[in-house]
View 1: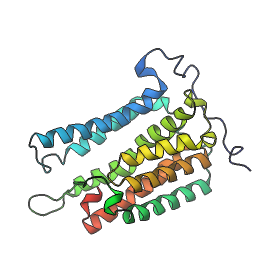
View 2 (view 1 turned 90 degrees about the horizontal axis):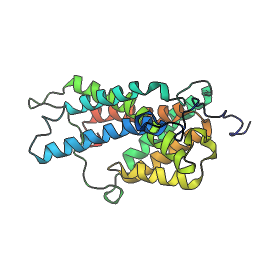
View 3 (view 1 turned 30 degrees about the horizontal axis):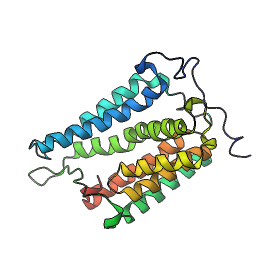
View 4 (view 1 turned 90 degrees about the vertical axis):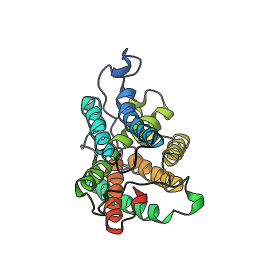
Length: 244
């Protein structure tokens, strides 16, 4: 069976196109942009607070707050995410997604040459002034990175932006029909979002291909979650906080 045949039309709600939805906050695009925008807004807030003299230790609890805020937005729009269905997700897609997530992790840890990154990441250090690791913060960080970020980012980068670049009525775009241009643009932008830009581009391509081949966004989410979850375990085990 070909990839195209293996993918039923992306389900959508009647009257859910941009043209049929008058209110900005009711648009399908907004439902996929707003969680990501909320996440980025907190990053901007953290940067501003650091510039105002707030220490990194004082800002450690901003991550759990950011995660809760993103979850709140996702829950508010949960009925809009017609692409979050399991019915086309096969066992082979799950295996492929996990394997891709592991490969991306290995590449992520090895694509760290100076020319492959922009600036130096301060990371997220859950170690307190007493030298002890705050395991509640660690749990919040791993849960956010492995369970929340993949859903939020894949809804934005793959489900929305990649398909929107292909055609503005993105809800009607088959993942497998996305062209090279849309794939390249979203992967590059996804890479630039990260300090390790080259690793980010590679990850963006990998997650996009997984999504396009399976036709189910959960494949990309699972691959992304595998990378982030295992990275979190590695970071804690090696105290390599800059990777966070």
